Amino acid sequence: MKKDLLEVIKEATKKVKNYHLHQKENSWFTTEEKGIILGQVVNPIERVGLYVPGGTAAYPSSLIMAAVPAIIVGVKEIVVVTPPSPDGKINPYLLSTARELGISEIYKIGGAQAIAALAYGTETIRRVDK
Image 1 (cartoon, rainbow, N blue to C red):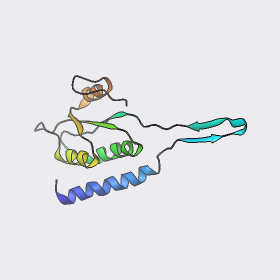
Image 2: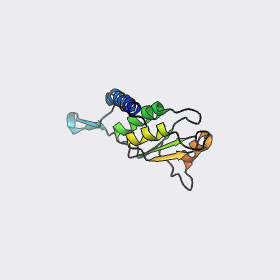
Image 3: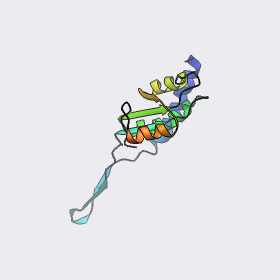
């Protein structure tokens, strides 16, 4: 990826991250009268799947906007599915963006079958929690 485009990806990621940091919910507890404890426990989902449109165009911004909130809250496994370009490959801009975000599990599959693969799993794609 060209250096200037990589800088744009980094800057966009930084801005999306700064925005979503304000939305993060935290666990909390309080003790009421008579020792009653109230609270909320917030735990991230273990494994999430992201569908990133593709095929004839690249949408690294879609990956950034879907992945960054998951990264912020501590999702351990982020899986990306995206349709291949006409030459049968995954768009290099999308791959570079995924690498920048620390995402390494990417599958070349699109459409309803991609959503089904995430939801139910296949021989090669382990199902996601959401």
